[in-house]
Structures are given as structure tokens and as C-alpha cells.
Image (tube, rainbow, N blue to C red; front, side, top):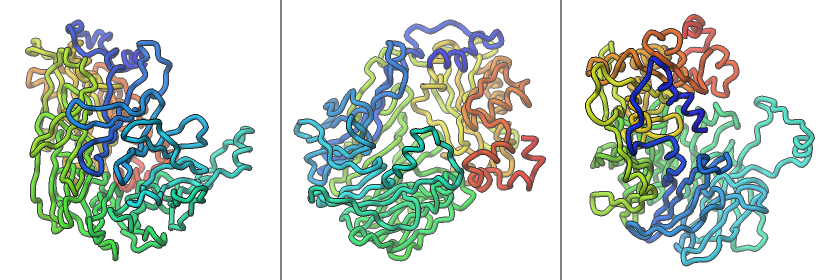
Length: 581
């Protein structure tokens, strides 16, 4: 894999137009990536003292490991530098949750003998993991009631034996819009040996589930069909009585929806959603009445996007918020007032878990010199509890900063810039511009190194590496995210070109030695860089790129999403625009 990276992106160094100085001593290298471990999911214990978390461990191709996905391991941390491994080297675990009494940690995995993803538990005091419940098909997500006996989960029904036999004999045709297999909400009494799970008859395809603190309510995200477009654009949260399985209310959002959480008294359900149908991302806070489904929007005009929420008390919500290239923790009152904002300079928070009873906060965060690690709040500051990559202490890092500039029409654009150590040479460094996909995504001023993201690897070989958050990116609010509408990839592409001009005028980059790369929508931009605007780029390495919008519309699984939140018109409504782009 790393040879592909070398030839597809770092291999720009081999081109005469982009020739660069040699490797700096102790710089980050491609081989180092195969040793990088990162914290993933986190879960605070019921007493708020400990944190269960997962760690991703990559296959080390350089050391001779077979190709394939890496392991995801389970740990429990009891303090700074005090983390104990519980499940290691056994594949992948996810869905980590504490037992209500705190004596065990539950997780999902698939082991030998399992027919699909299965629920397991491992005692905190030691011992082997044991199987808690196995369904006829894979368990996709779950929630355990406070009594520890009732399990709610989302899964499909058992596969049709006839269809399974046909697949085994080679009949694997997918009839579009006809072969969808629905997922359902189920419940089972774990205290009753051999109890059969009960399927709840809810109106649609279930994909996500949230349980209230007392276990009396469930919020279930339902889409009308299994189509990808419906999962993106037509899902709604439904409030369900956990005892009866009856729908209490439906929160009919016109836009994309994200995660949610019940208020302590169950009277409200806070959730993330798009501000309207044309909003490309579910990044605005909404608060709904659980009895009626009526909702209000909070801080719609803020130049930010929210990724995760939790209730501090019955009237206030803590929100993990992307703000430009950084993050902040923001408290909102349900009436819409911002009560507090905490910026954590020098790090980017990627996920959080909040214990309302004990007022404990745990987060995963990354920075320019380390990937995701576990941090726990100590007063108003965050204390680092883990260091899974001590080898990074010996790295000679490049210089990383946020670079802002003004586009040709006056719009403010920013991005993350990594440069080699020291002053720029006369005429500037050669540059690798790395364009994110989406376009509803953005690059943070944190860990910027990985597959196709050369960051400090490129800097170590004498390149500047720039990650532009062009118009249409997230982190800048609804207005900025919608600036690509009706003109993709028009002005947003010229934001990239204007970035080259600004970096060149600042003496940082040699505008004659710029390469461009990116995947998906970033591949779209890279393809433009190799054709319509090749005078601005000495090399281009697009991958998984959109290159022909009309055929893309006819074959993609997201034609509705493509139009409703980006292009705004179908091809036959603006044929020339589609042809030109």
C-alpha cells in the first residue's frame, strides 16, 4: 500500500517539475504510519471514575503483516498513564458500553462460532469475555436498560434460506430498489434463558437508537426504505415507548439528521440536523418536545457545525463544535442562549462522553504532533491520560499553522499548512495541495498524516503541504457550506487556485511546482487541476474521483442528495452546466 502512496502522491517528488530536497533527519516517514495507534470510541463508567476505550492498531505491512484491516482493541483507563488492556489481537471490537452496575463492559464483535456480530461482556475485575446475546443476523447497535435485563437492539431478520442457497449457487444480482432488506428494532429479556427476541413494528428501516436515562423511552431513526438516498435525506427520529413499542411522536425534520440525546426528565429530545433541506450537513442543534415532535432550532446562524451533544441538566446542553479548523465545547440553554464556550488551543477534540450525574467529561483529541488520545477533564482543563505512540517524541516535525487568504470575490478562505523546518528557500517550497472530499467536510489543525495525507511526511521531504477548506466546507456554518450550490465545482475550485497565489505571494510556495491530489470530491478538483486548469498544477493525482457528472447522476445511489444539497437542479434542468462541469 505504501508504494501506491509513494507513486500516487509523494511520488510527485520524482517529477522534474516538483523536485525537492532530501529527507530530513528523524522526519515522519511512510513506514511510521504502520505503527500509529489511535484511540477510538470512549465510554465513562457509571461512577465517572474510569474510561473504557478502543484503540485501532494497523497491520504493519512493512514488517511483513498480511494485507487487511487492523485490529480494534479494548482498554480501560483508571487515571493518567494507567490503562489496562482487556481485548487485544482478536480482531475488531466496537459498540463499547458499561454495564449499568459498572462491573463489566459490553461490546460488539464477531468471533469463531458466531453467525454474525454478537454482544459480549468482559468483567472489569478480570476474566474472559463471555457471549451475552447472539441474534439470527448481525447486531448493528444496542442499548441495555438500567435494570441490566432488557436488551434493545437493531438488526435484520434471519436471512431467507432460499435466497442464501441462491447466493451460494452464484445468483447474486441486486435488483435496484427491490432487494432492500430492512433493519428493525428488537428487544429481548436477558434474564429469561432461551427467551426469543420480539420485533417491534415501527414505520420504516431502523438505523440508529438512543435510550433515555430511565429506560422508559427510545428514540429510533427510521427511513422509509433501505435506499442510501432515503437514509441520508428522509430519516426522522421517532420517540418510542420502551415498554410497549408504540410510537409516541415523530420528529419530522426536513433535512439530514445526526445524533441525539434525551433530557434528564424525558420531556425533550435534542438532536442534530441540517438547518433546511438544502443544508449539506446535520450540524445545527435542534430541541424537540417528545410528546408532540415539535422542534426549535438553536444557533442556526453561528459560524460552526456541531458534531456531538449531551445534556448538562434539564435545561442546558453541551455541544462539541467545529469552528473553522479547530473545535470548542459550547453550552446552550434550551431557549437558545449560549452560556459558555471553551476553546482548547493546540488540540482538536474529535469525540466526547459526558457523565451528567458526576459532572465528568472524557474526550478524544489530536494535535499536530500526535493522533487521537484520551483526555479527561480536570477542573477547566483537559488532562492527557494516554500516550500510545511514544516513538513520536523523537520526530523532527515540520511547522504547522492555519493559513488564511482572500479569494478573488472577497470570501475569506482558510486551510491547514505544513512546511519544512526553517525559512522557505528563495522562490518558495514545492507544494502538495490535498483537497478533502464531500465537499461537506473540512480539515482540522490537528493530526494531518495518513494514507493519502502526507502532512509532515511531505514536509520531511522538502514539500509544503496545504489542506484548503474551500467554500462548501463544514466548520464555517450554514452560509459557507451552501456557497457551492448551483455552481459545483465553480468558485470553490478557484478558491484552490487563489490559495496558490496567496501562498506564492507570501514567499512560501513556488507556484510553478504545485501538485494537487484528493479523493471523491477532492478527486473532482484534482481532475480539474489536470485539465481545465493545468497551467496552475505541475502534477495531479486524483483518486475515486467524480469525473463525469451526468453519468454519475444516472448511476450513483445518491441522486436526490446530489441535487437537493449541492447542484440544486437535475441534469435535464441545467444540461449545459452539467456538461461544462
